[in-house]
Length: 232
Image 1 (cartoon, rainbow, N blue to C red):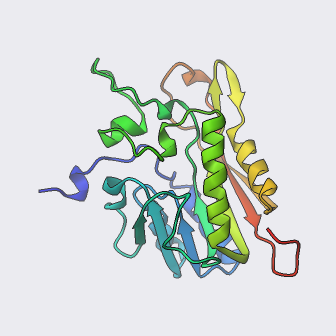
Image 2 (image 1 turned 60 degrees about the vertical axis):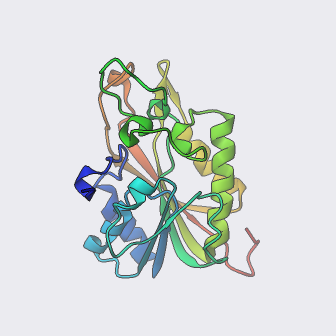
């Protein structure tokens, strides 16, 4: 019998300290509906525990992870770059965390018995071709997220709030500024940056750069222009 306990674990769920930050932002902006377009196992549903009583909707490309969402989450399965089920301007808020383009995107099928912290190994099969969890930092990663962000902006109402949680990583001893790229890209697509929150989240201490982890995650908060302002 297949149960949630026997389904594949997601290797990159929201860190618990992020949820009250998200809830505070939604409360301050009066959001009554929220969408996580890359939701994994639907941990966004735990906003209920922090006082959010509005509509919680999630989208996830891998069915095994989508099936683990809490019952009160309205879950859709599909590509975040093509959410055809959603209307223009349907949501008061977007809250999501893109993949980081780090070594968790490795997708070779290791057979040496060593432990791997990757999306592919956690799922136990190759990822969907459109899943950015298999994309290392580079132009393909950036182009995929440009399309995803454009679709998210489409379904966000005028004046709505867009919250993105992301983290930089170390490659060959240097910081790869994935977080700042996402912030700049969302502004290029017309959103207004209104807040940046740094949350202490040291992360896993494994791999070649274990001693050089970036010690915080960013929560970027944007606003979609109101009608009458310069349009997104």
